[in-house]
Amino acid sequence: MKKRTDFLVIGSGIAGLTFALKASKFGKVSIVTKADLDDTNTRYAQGGIASVFREPDNFEKHIRDTLIAGAGCCDESVVRMVVSEAPERIQDLIELGVPFDKKEDGTYDLAREGGHSEYRILHHKDKTGQAIQKTLMERVRSDPNIEIFEHHFAIEFLTQHHLGEVVKRNYPGIKCFGAYVADLVNQKVITFLSKITVVATGGLGNVYLTTTNPEIATGDGIAMAYRAKGTIENMEFVQFHPTSLYDPNARPSFLITEALRGYGAILKNMKGENFMNRYDSRGSLAPRDIVVRAIDTEMKIWGDDHVWLDCTHLNPEGLKDHFPNVYEHCLARGIDITGDLIPVVPAAHYSCGGIKVDIDGQSNIDRLYALGEVSSTGLHGANRLASNSLIEAVVFAHRAAMHSAKRLEELSFEESIPNWDYKGTTHLEEMVLITQSIKEVQMIMSNYVGIVRSDLRLERAMVRLEILYQETENLYKRSLISQKICELRNLINVGYIIIKLAKNRKESIGLHYSIDYPRRAVTEF
Image 1 (cartoon, rainbow, N blue to C red):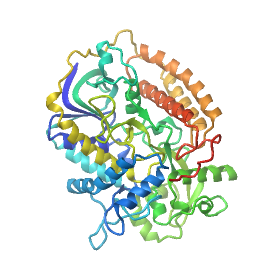
Image 2: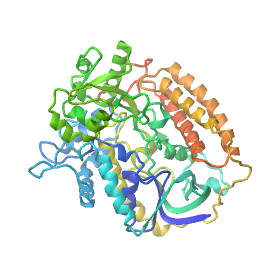
Image 3: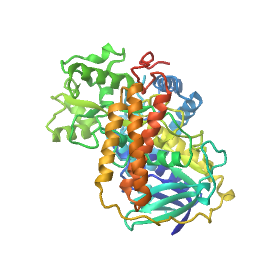
Image 4: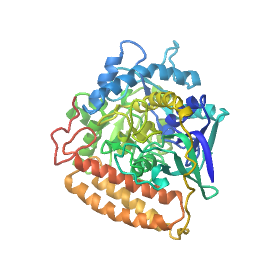
């Protein structure tokens, strides 16, 4: 079965939906998402979206904060582009109806987070992502030029490989003609032919045991691009959020927004000490890579499973008003943040690397664009500055839509792409073969490729992952397509890339810290 569309968008977070709304003015858009439309990383974003909005803030301050957090690994020209275009893209969101919080005088209530030198975070309480997701979905659902395919799983990008040609990595002429997409409800594979394909599948947090990401974050887009011989970079820089609520039985881990520390909350160890000042002069508002390593060190010193976040000295009504989501969630678990310390632990949160793209969001594979967390734009470097991800998504979504729209007339559908081949495949009888392997991948990555690494740990991880890879590929080739086996395959691919790039980086920098190369442990610029 074949479907044709001008723009195939895979993913339904802020990047995918923003692109879809802008591209729909130029052609037909099809949005493919493997769960419900609102089941995205965006919906879980609490803190906000960063942009220079008023004095004393200015572009140079935001640029410098981003470069410092990125540990000298950012592309400065990209940083300058994103920061300078951010206010206009924020205005786009406001015009769409995103209800950013305002003060009584009508001005926007700007917050501050770790690594930021000024108050520049626009937010909606502590549910910013949810507000953005809801607004964009309402607009997308009412757009007659956009068709939505929920519970459809993208399996592979279509390239010359599917026409019988040999496609090698770094091959200069690779083109994307769409994707094979599994209809999960009707259990059939659709051949989506497109003139432009946009991958906006979000993150990869579920490659680790503890993550703030929803269960759908399995690195699908990165794995698909890697198998299509796309260029992937900076995957060793996986950001662990310093403060997720400590609850071993919860998945995903509930995120305690960094904005709470911006509001004045303080990290304390089991002895009750404000330990962060020993690690960085910025204290609890230091960049995330510094904070997360400090927490990891304190947990090892005290032999406990978490540290504390203290809000008890802050105005109770102000806490409830600014952070209702955190307040209500903690209260449901017996923690009153106005009087109780919050147990917190680091959790895998964001991938700073991904599919390498240019300033218009296009990958090295022609006609394939990557937007949002799945991409590597050069903005984040070795460590993402808090709340820079949402603004990156809308800036690049706009640029990609404008760039790709100009190409529509010159492009055509590749009709000779064959439909999916079901031959030799059967239903998987033992789901335990998949569920157990997923747990093994997560254990390997968490124990050997987490916050602190070493050459020995990385080598062990690679050896163990290779066994899982061979087992899974054999299983995949003889099984009918299912979401779980595809996700396992993607998690293994992503884990391999993280390990490989981490092994190649013989230094400690940003989010990649190795005990064998500890000199540049502290973020610097």
